[in-house]
Length: 177
Image (cartoon, rainbow, N blue to C red; front, side, top):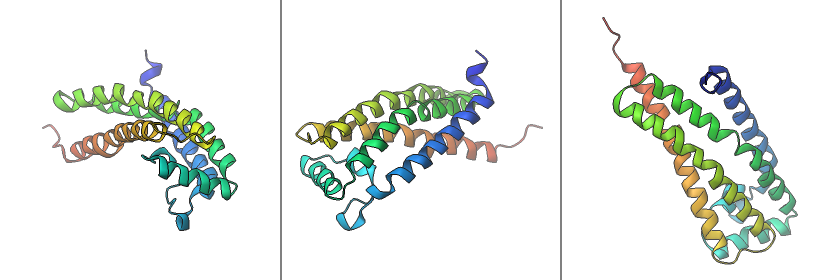
Protein backbone atom coordinates (compact mmCIF):
# COMPACT_ATOMS: atom_id res chain seq x y z
CA UNK A 1 0.00 0.00 0.00
CA UNK A 2 1.23 3.43 -0.92
CA UNK A 3 0.18 5.07 2.39
CA UNK A 4 2.60 2.87 4.36
CA UNK A 5 5.59 3.90 2.29
CA UNK A 6 4.63 7.54 2.04
CA UNK A 7 7.37 10.05 2.88
CA UNK A 8 4.63 12.21 4.44
CA UNK A 9 3.66 9.45 6.85
CA UNK A 10 7.28 9.01 7.85
CA UNK A 11 7.63 12.76 8.38
CA UNK A 12 4.45 12.90 10.50
CA UNK A 13 5.56 9.91 12.60
CA UNK A 14 9.01 11.45 13.12
CA UNK A 15 7.57 14.82 14.14
CA UNK A 16 5.10 13.12 16.51
CA UNK A 17 7.88 10.97 17.97
CA UNK A 18 10.19 13.90 18.60
CA UNK A 19 7.35 16.02 19.98
CA UNK A 20 6.15 13.27 22.28
CA UNK A 21 9.71 12.57 23.42
CA UNK A 22 10.14 16.24 24.27
CA UNK A 23 6.85 16.33 26.17
CA UNK A 24 7.76 13.20 28.15
CA UNK A 25 11.18 14.65 28.92
CA UNK A 26 9.60 17.87 30.18
CA UNK A 27 7.09 16.01 32.36
CA UNK A 28 9.80 13.71 33.74
CA UNK A 29 12.39 16.37 34.52
CA UNK A 30 11.52 16.44 38.26
CA UNK A 31 12.22 12.68 38.44
CA UNK A 32 15.92 13.36 37.88
CA UNK A 33 17.39 13.63 41.37
CA UNK A 34 21.15 13.51 40.99
CA UNK A 35 21.75 13.96 44.72
CA UNK A 36 19.75 10.75 45.27
CA UNK A 37 21.63 8.93 42.47
CA UNK A 38 18.60 9.00 40.17
CA UNK A 39 20.33 10.71 37.29
CA UNK A 40 18.22 9.41 34.39
CA UNK A 41 14.72 9.96 35.75
CA UNK A 42 12.20 7.41 34.48
CA UNK A 43 14.98 5.44 32.77
CA UNK A 44 16.32 4.59 36.24
CA UNK A 45 13.09 2.72 37.05
CA UNK A 46 13.06 1.17 33.57
CA UNK A 47 16.41 -0.44 34.36
CA UNK A 48 16.54 -1.06 38.12
CA UNK A 49 17.66 -4.72 37.72
CA UNK A 50 17.43 -5.39 41.47
CA UNK A 51 14.68 -5.14 44.08
CA UNK A 52 16.82 -2.87 46.27
CA UNK A 53 17.36 -0.34 43.48
CA UNK A 54 13.68 -0.33 42.50
CA UNK A 55 12.63 0.16 46.14
CA UNK A 56 15.16 3.00 46.56
CA UNK A 57 13.89 4.84 43.47
CA UNK A 58 10.20 4.45 44.34
CA UNK A 59 10.76 5.40 47.99
CA UNK A 60 12.81 8.46 46.98
CA UNK A 61 10.12 9.63 44.53
CA UNK A 62 7.39 8.94 47.10
CA UNK A 63 9.21 11.02 49.75
CA UNK A 64 9.60 13.85 47.21
CA UNK A 65 5.93 13.65 46.22
CA UNK A 66 6.77 12.54 42.66
CA UNK A 67 4.95 9.20 42.34
CA UNK A 68 2.08 10.80 40.40
CA UNK A 69 4.59 12.46 38.06
CA UNK A 70 6.18 9.07 37.38
CA UNK A 71 2.76 7.50 36.86
CA UNK A 72 1.72 10.26 34.45
CA UNK A 73 4.91 9.92 32.43
CA UNK A 74 4.51 6.13 32.29
CA UNK A 75 0.86 6.35 31.25
CA UNK A 76 1.67 8.86 28.51
CA UNK A 77 4.38 6.50 27.30
CA UNK A 78 1.58 4.16 26.21
CA UNK A 79 0.82 6.75 23.50
CA UNK A 80 4.49 7.18 22.59
CA UNK A 81 5.01 3.42 22.17
CA UNK A 82 2.40 3.45 19.41
CA UNK A 83 4.33 6.09 17.46
CA UNK A 84 8.12 5.69 17.69
CA UNK A 85 8.37 2.01 16.65
CA UNK A 86 6.28 2.78 13.56
CA UNK A 87 8.55 5.73 12.72
CA UNK A 88 11.71 3.64 13.14
CA UNK A 89 10.22 0.76 11.17
CA UNK A 90 9.18 2.94 8.27
CA UNK A 91 12.55 4.72 8.26
CA UNK A 92 14.40 1.38 8.04
CA UNK A 93 12.07 0.21 5.28
CA UNK A 94 12.50 3.41 3.27
CA UNK A 95 16.28 3.27 3.59
CA UNK A 96 16.41 -0.45 2.74
CA UNK A 97 14.39 0.11 -0.45
CA UNK A 98 17.29 1.92 -2.05
CA UNK A 99 19.83 -0.75 -1.10
CA UNK A 100 20.87 -4.14 -2.35
CA UNK A 101 22.30 -7.20 -0.66
CA UNK A 102 23.24 -7.31 3.00
CA UNK A 103 22.26 -3.73 3.93
CA UNK A 104 18.82 -4.16 2.34
CA UNK A 105 18.30 -7.42 4.21
CA UNK A 106 19.35 -5.86 7.51
CA UNK A 107 17.05 -2.87 6.92
CA UNK A 108 14.02 -5.03 6.14
CA UNK A 109 14.78 -7.28 9.11
CA UNK A 110 15.13 -4.25 11.42
CA UNK A 111 11.96 -2.68 10.05
CA UNK A 112 10.09 -5.68 11.43
CA UNK A 113 12.20 -6.29 14.55
CA UNK A 114 11.90 -2.71 15.83
CA UNK A 115 8.12 -3.20 16.00
CA UNK A 116 8.82 -5.48 18.98
CA UNK A 117 9.49 -2.27 20.92
CA UNK A 118 5.72 -1.83 21.21
CA UNK A 119 4.95 -4.95 23.30
CA UNK A 120 8.27 -4.69 25.15
CA UNK A 121 7.59 -1.06 26.10
CA UNK A 122 3.97 -1.83 27.04
CA UNK A 123 5.08 -4.70 29.30
CA UNK A 124 7.78 -2.49 30.80
CA UNK A 125 5.19 0.23 31.52
CA UNK A 126 2.87 -2.23 33.25
CA UNK A 127 5.79 -3.40 35.40
CA UNK A 128 6.76 0.22 36.20
CA UNK A 129 3.19 1.01 37.29
CA UNK A 130 3.32 -2.14 39.44
CA UNK A 131 6.53 -0.92 41.11
CA UNK A 132 5.14 2.59 41.57
CA UNK A 133 2.21 0.99 43.41
CA UNK A 134 4.65 -0.55 45.88
CA UNK A 135 5.19 -4.02 44.42
CA UNK A 136 8.87 -4.20 43.56
CA UNK A 137 9.35 -7.78 44.72
CA UNK A 138 11.39 -10.18 42.61
CA UNK A 139 11.05 -10.72 39.62
CA UNK A 140 9.29 -7.40 38.77
CA UNK A 141 12.45 -5.22 38.61
CA UNK A 142 14.34 -7.88 36.66
CA UNK A 143 11.52 -8.39 34.13
CA UNK A 144 11.19 -4.62 33.72
CA UNK A 145 14.92 -4.30 33.09
CA UNK A 146 15.05 -7.16 30.58
CA UNK A 147 12.14 -5.70 28.57
CA UNK A 148 13.71 -2.23 28.66
CA UNK A 149 17.17 -3.53 27.70
CA UNK A 150 15.75 -5.41 24.71
CA UNK A 151 13.77 -2.32 23.67
CA UNK A 152 16.81 -0.07 23.96
CA UNK A 153 18.91 -2.59 22.00
CA UNK A 154 16.41 -2.54 19.12
CA UNK A 155 16.28 1.25 19.16
CA UNK A 156 20.08 1.47 19.20
CA UNK A 157 20.42 -1.06 16.36
CA UNK A 158 18.16 1.17 14.30
CA UNK A 159 19.12 4.70 15.31
CA UNK A 160 22.77 4.28 16.23
CA UNK A 161 23.92 1.54 13.87
CA UNK A 162 21.78 0.93 10.78
CA UNK A 163 20.46 4.36 9.78
CA UNK A 164 23.79 6.20 10.29
CA UNK A 165 25.75 3.40 8.57
CA UNK A 166 23.54 3.53 5.49
CA UNK A 167 23.64 7.32 5.37
CA UNK A 168 27.45 7.32 5.63
CA UNK A 169 27.69 4.67 2.91
CA UNK A 170 25.38 6.74 0.72
CA UNK A 171 27.48 9.88 1.30
CA UNK A 172 30.67 8.12 0.22
CA UNK A 173 29.14 6.17 -2.67
CA UNK A 174 30.74 7.04 -5.98
CA UNK A 175 28.28 8.28 -8.58
CA UNK A 176 27.70 6.05 -11.59
CA UNK A 177 29.40 7.22 -14.76
